[in-house]
Length: 164
Image 1 (cartoon, rainbow, N blue to C red):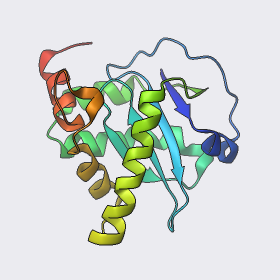
Image 2 (image 1 turned 45 degrees about the horizontal axis):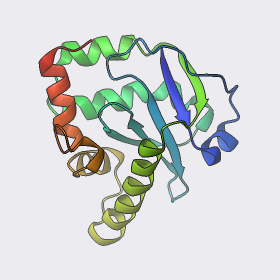
Image 3 (image 1 turned 90 degrees about the vertical axis):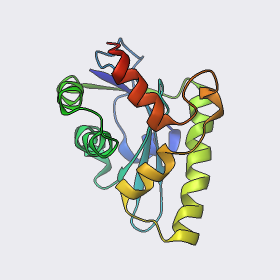
């Protein structure tokens, strides 16, 4: 079970039942999400604990949470995170609780990643969800200043420490 904290524009598109956040059973914990109304439309999900960004197709918005574990698995495997960790994390994501955003720092990272992704799209032609995810994952994030500075490193350190 994991909590998916969605921006208002994504909640308006998805129209899920919104509840209070419960205790996540995943190692990575809660995720924050927003919609990019580009062509094609994409969704950006950012992990609260590591700030790992995952970009994936938005359509169909109603099935975003059910499709998310596979998109996360692709990003984690591309970052050379062990298959055992990836498999276990995806299995723990069987249920989702939709919530409103609560952490302003992570919402700020959603906005920053969105801004950077527009630049990567417009200036470098990066439009593939996996390519955008990996490029954003290597971006220094000020909330991570006490440890790994980039989210890709933060995920690798978390997995290496075996924190569960």
